[in-house]
Image (cartoon, rainbow, N blue to C red; front, side):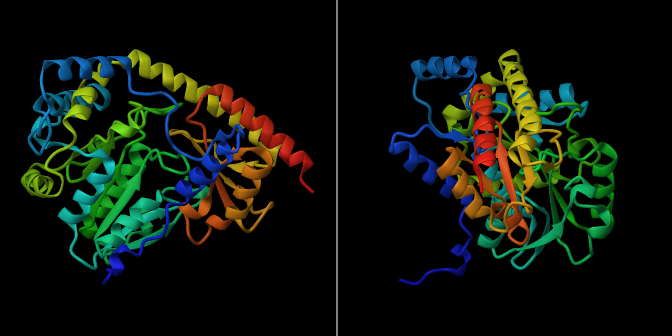
Length: 380
């Protein structure tokens, strides 16, 4: 049978690490999970109760392609309350997770062969989804000096698009309002479509994350209920698009997805009223961040920038190895801690970096750091 080169994408290495950790657990070992960016908590209680009531009331079928009107309106209200930005509910598109949002964005904005800039290190699915659509991911190398974010000077007229993430996965760094405005202005000047990944908004520690909608209306914004709202498995997210792009996205959504899962939309709407519970989660992440920021240097991982948001630390381990995948395997085997090789996020430089996720319980983070410190002391 013939196959398409579009499907020749790189593996998502963190999923391989998860499987290796599962096999260790099947042997009876207790593994501390610092590899996957998944909250240990489930959906807010109010979301679960709302879904129970909806299911008791009758069957849940298709919704309209753009999502439940009540959910779209509530998301628009949130932008006014959180960012001071007036967004018409009609510009809100509910999606089957943020992954569907990226796919819809790329198809809507770019023709085959278009070039889209991404700042490395970056979430690996960006480049893999782009490749599956015969689009070219153009690496914009970032560093500690640029807070691991792309700079306007790196944008050339050969680019058709720019994808930014703030807070970023894997670094947890954020773009300030001035920096985001400068990127938006450079994109407008060079006719580059700007896409802003904001799925970690709400998980911030010292300053509030800035939405691209605060500096431009000519932008696609993608968000999700997976992270702050602790609903990874529900597969529901949203997009904000310019008014004249809504019908384009609607047609694509109708044909590609029909709609986001109805049950997940019901739960998502209720989750937006559960801020007290969600702020409790944020306090846990903040404690976990302190545990790792203080403890990782004692375990040999001292070269990292403390994250502004999300729940990751991205560490330079070049003094320990030039093979991060082998080092991650060693740590899993000898310390019982699962971590992610940087190759997932930066194919060229990631062999010298590791990502640590602190999305699990504080108890797990304390135990994980203790194991890493013991491992480091015993390492030849």
